[in-house]
Image 1: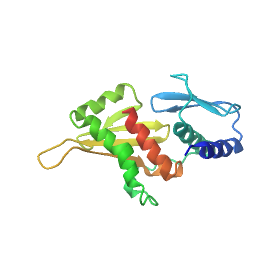
Image 2: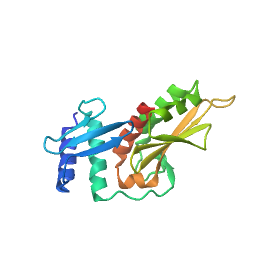
Image 3: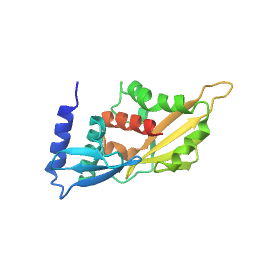
Image 4: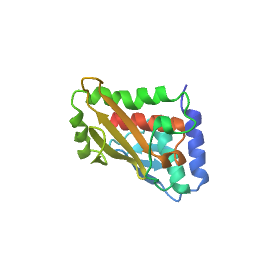
Length: 183
């Protein structure tokens, strides 16, 4: 099943707000141009069209940005703590958590290597933790715990509670997967 219906609706929702001009938006380590006339989103770094799921996420973000993004609350929530996510956690874990564990299990400190290429900073928590700004006003907290004698390596990705005022559950799953892939 394609993303055509979701992309069409996302464009309709954005264009109803009558943006004044073409828009650029920073997302992770890239900047994307949003061509309102051609209804295209493309990477300015790679000069290629954004993938459909990235386009949807960017359009949803821009729609909320034009309406007014919610203020950061300062309360970090795990995916399981969001309301209305029953049944979605396995997908989030598979896309967002497991890739981080696989990549950094042998060398958790190498998670810090992404600080040079992503809008992120080191923070306290876990054995290694960073806060990455996926979009402006949309931080993700990535925590990693080393393997010990009792437990295997583990990771978690938390979002500011305000993210639910920007994205739906499915978008948060996609966002988590893209953040994990960027690390």
